[in-house]
Amino acid sequence: MDKVEAVRQARALLRGARGGTLATQQEGQPFAALVTPAMAGDLSVLLWLSRLSEHTRQLSREPRCALLVQGAAPEANPQTAPRLSLTGLAEIVEGEDAAALKARWLALHPYAALYAGFGDFALWRIRPQAALLVGGFAAATRLRAAELLPDPAAVAAIAAAEPGICAHMNEDHSDAMAQIATRLLRREAAAWRMVAVDVDGCDMAAGDAVCRLDFPAPVADADGVRKALVAAARQARAAG
Image (cartoon, rainbow, N blue to C red; front, side, top):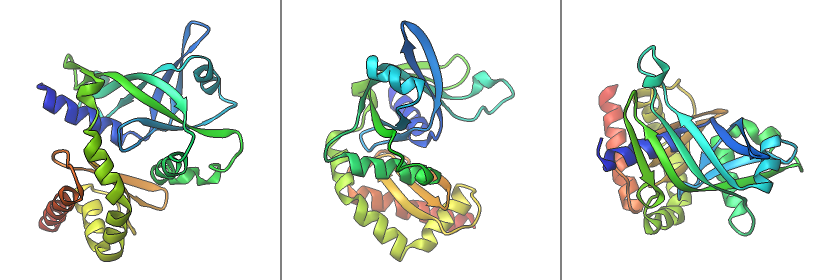
């Protein structure tokens, strides 16, 4: 597998992950916990964590950590499943970005609105340092952060355009969203709405259900998003 394909697979696994295993340190002893990640536009990992959790207290003492996410195994052997181990440094999200990043995490985990306002919770971010992609049985590729992370200029351009893109698709092209969700992504018919977009794809939600459309290749600006969505909508109509 070449690096371009490895990066594409790695980002798709990360951006599509709604659950994962977080590895922290407990007085030098490894400790693993189930977490529910969401990816920021720059591919940093967002976690909504309770201060009462063991892993949260451990991150407060030692920010070095790892996150494992995986896709579905195409065969009976679980080792045929694609998976990614990401290492990085964790920090509490504060400042002007906190509200927007929390909203992004909630958009991808809408069921969490029930406890999103609890006072013992806080938003954490893991800044990636490196990753190991296993694309299946005996197919591993190591990725440095510089190889894995998207172009900062593209991230900024799409972040600035994201509110307008989501509003336009939901208000003017809700039928296209529904067709993409049901015909391309094989989800049940529902009132699907775009809730997030990034250089690698977009996310849709209907109630507590979420799904993701991965673009064929990373895009650099709003026009790139538009072209990718037009192509997806045409593909969805043809699939009907």
